Image (cartoon, rainbow, N blue to C red; front, side):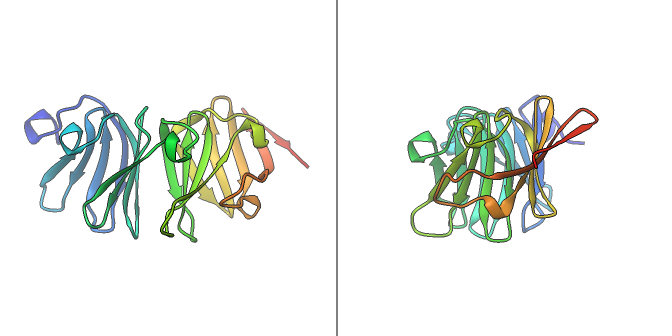
Length: 193
């Protein structure tokens, strides 16, 4: 068990994931914590430049660790330990990043409180595309840690709905309307075609 005696200073844990070194990444209301195999706890918080310490989610990529915050945008701990912040100023659709997933082309999908931002972070300049109710989503206020890739569909949880969108219709670098395959409300599935 881990608590305040072991270095977890926060009283809320919002998200858990594993990085490529098998470290446990812990999103808390006091920043991102990394618990190593040797039980060493490392904190990323205001002391490291994290302005908003409420961390909902994290995702390991080949270029570092991304983690989403409530109101502080998306943080990127690069492999060289440089910390970057991606915000609405950079094109993110909202400052609250609630869920993250990545596809096999290394596009990062960020579910926010105002829609989806898809980020191609592999080039020298970030390419960010945003999708919301303006582009055909029935709802764009997504829940924390409620995103997944399933059978070539982006699946999102939001209030009252489970949304599935066809990934082949998403175009990074543009805001073309994604093709929604169906929406589920309670026990009922509503086919869009």
